[in-house]
Image 1 (cartoon, rainbow, N blue to C red):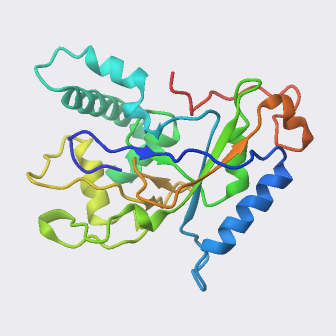
Image 2 (image 1 turned 60 degrees about the horizontal axis):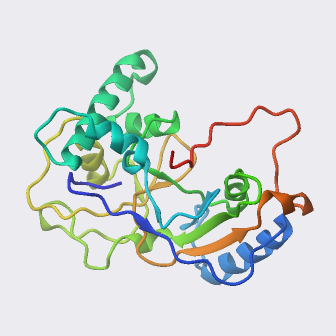
Length: 258
């Protein structure tokens, strides 16, 4: 998540190198090796090593409100503001409608929980999906066009936050995976609900583990530690990579850049 209205940083993805993996077994072997070399001893049940799968290569990993479709809609706003201001206005309008339309189902949820729920149901937000399960992300990497390579990226989520980062009012922002109840997370979500923006606040990307939605979600930029794996195009995936079952209705591609 980003906690300011200035243009939000995006995840800059490293250039893949080495040989692409061709089967699920090859991928699990490679990802397991990386995970073991980066996992912390006695790190607890919830891992800070997160994975993200995409069905084509992008220079950056941008959340929904920064993808072309949403940005083009924001440009159509008749406002004397920058594109970032128009984008925020469109996001706020969409969140307001989501909150009103789902009022019967959202009772008792905090604004942060409502914001994460909006992402879960496919509304463009400033959240970006990650998971601590590498195998599950390989499905998204293989959900692409014939002959196109897919990619899975890995990172240590805590490294998103700079060492000397400051939160609100100059308080130190510690390197940690945050909950939805963290003060800075609540502040960042509140901006999309028409809360005022602090002057002089430095925006940061926040790694957040949701309370009510099982998949971890992170903000729009990773600092270091991204590791890519490349999947060969679908014409070679029959050698063991995951595919949708025959006759299964295809899901909407949530990784599309339009």
